[in-house]
Image (cartoon, rainbow, N blue to C red):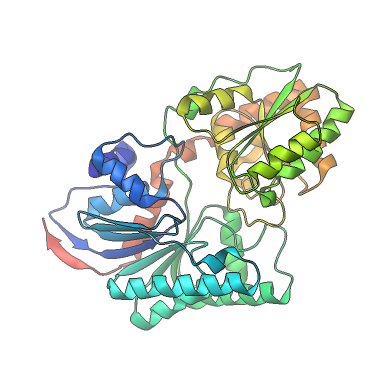
Length: 427
């Protein structure tokens, strides 16, 4: 059942405590695009969860709310519209308006309309506190909740702008100023997935109104650690894995440029593999064929099973996260997954993960083929360099298995420290 699974998520390191009395708080949580209704239905029916390396953020938070008696209304932007009530909690997949998928003014109108709907839901449900993930709407829209004395906790899974690329255009600068106004005047608290996210909030707001907390993604213990070791260099052929969304902004086509570059320099010494799904998947397959890269570049598609994931990670000697300057990366959890399997990760400088993952990563200049090629040549041709980065992965893994710094417990800590009121209930 759901409650049993959620409690199992916390385990012995969680913060749930038996209490004779507690405050029953009503919480609105607007999260990302995941299908929370299907996930919850499966949990209630006892169906095994679909393959995931990470502990879902909603499961982490439910572990805290179920331990404190809070009632939560979860709203996601999943495109499959659906609703469900379970116990004292409600779950809703509420798709964004179609204009949100367009560019320019239409996108911003869609973001505002969706945000106004969420504000209305918070008011109608008489929420004691409202939590919003980045991407739910423009932050300034949520300032309206101050009129109804509903505190807002912002959760930044993405940065405010691409790292190293502050807002330049007139519209971008205006949005940045509005973001700053929200964090300076209205955000009761802010949760950040990386130090870079926190720096940007402080830069935009100058003096944020509420406290800022750091959290770390949490992974299932005993899964990624089962991936076979990458082996010791030298490697006859160096295997590089891209894991994640297949989108142009994530740098997938850049990898093809890099593969061509290194194949000319070191024929037959590198092999590349894409694992994931996204809107650019078919275009990427066509491009691999058009460039005659099929002998060195593989694209098996989305990882759908634990064994498939284990086999794919085992194939790789390193991972690549080549995010472009067009994407607001908050941390890059695929980089974390590489580290948890004991593989070094080569990152674009726009990716904030290097500050958290340290010497387990190598940072290359964003969208610079030669900079990335230099990093991979070093890993292939210098055994000592590869081993140093590989050994460094062990030093940074523990934080991603420490649920005291997971989002659920950090949100709970923020709610408690803010003194969010609620109805007093005696058990």
